[in-house]
Picture 1 (spheres, rainbow, N blue to C red):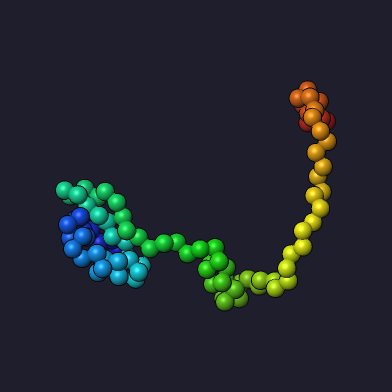
Picture 2: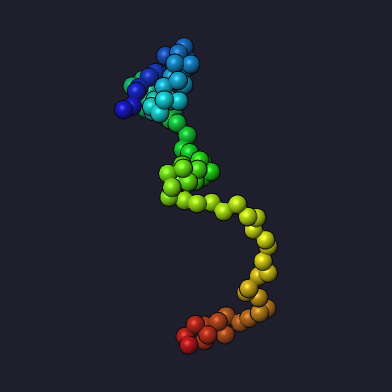
Length: 90
C-alpha cells in the first residue's frame, strides 16, 4: 500500500517516513495534490539475492578462486566488409 504526503509534512516528519520505507512501504510525495516523486525501499543487491537463493538451497556457490584463461577467439585483423558478407552467405 502506498502512503501519500505533502512536502511540508515530509519535512517535519522525515524520520517517521523513513522508518516506514525501512519497513518496505512506498511514500508518494505530493505538491498541491499532484505526485512529484516517491520514497521507496532500495532493491536488494545481486549479492543479497544470491545469498537468499543459497540459503534457500537453490544455489550453491563455489569457494575456489577462478584462474584467468587465455582468449579463445583471435582477431584475424582488418577485413573488407564484402568478405564478411560473402562469409555470412555461406
